[in-house]
Length: 302
Image (cartoon, rainbow, N blue to C red):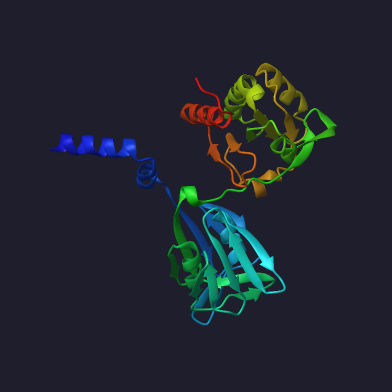
């Protein structure tokens, strides 16, 4: 009986990729605290410009921040004092100091109206539950929400830094993302004294040489401090790294690229605002998956 059950499960999984995704999807926690401008996404903290607040018995959350993390584009309509949220599946409009909410052309009534604080739209936890089809848990000043990891949108952020060996030139990410022939972009953030980064650099160099003519761009962001120029050049020569490298000496990417653990890589797809996939630490299995995803994006068949 046990053998039959296992075979049945394997058969179901083989014919239902959606079911596979739902069974094995990793759950991610998003956490806030009233009065704090920090939001924690999967354990990593990011700064918001407005903190969650309590008014009476209601807890309010900044709408734009959480909406963008969930993949929505957010538009403020000043003449109507309303907010529009849009993604591929859902279109929402709501109004300040009004309980009306339109979601996919259906009109709903909020329990508590959105308000403005410090020029930001704040929405009650009940209203956010309706927008996101989820359930926020409130425990005193702590607010948390559980979502599938594939619902989180890690947005790539454009950068422009000096080329590592020629400060008179710069490397700008969007220039590569907007090239008509680009089908996939890999960004690696690294530093010379990170020994595991060396293995990742070498592997990404191999990918670049194999698939650059098929539409893959690989870009390195080196976060070395001063006085490492000679060591960096020796390393790149030894590893035969020939993809473009820029220098972020102040590590400003830390604030915008999720403060990644080293080594790492980020796979981006032109036309998409969210990172397609990113991985931290070195892993042969992750490298194999990355190569397969690159081949798929570049339309390469074996």
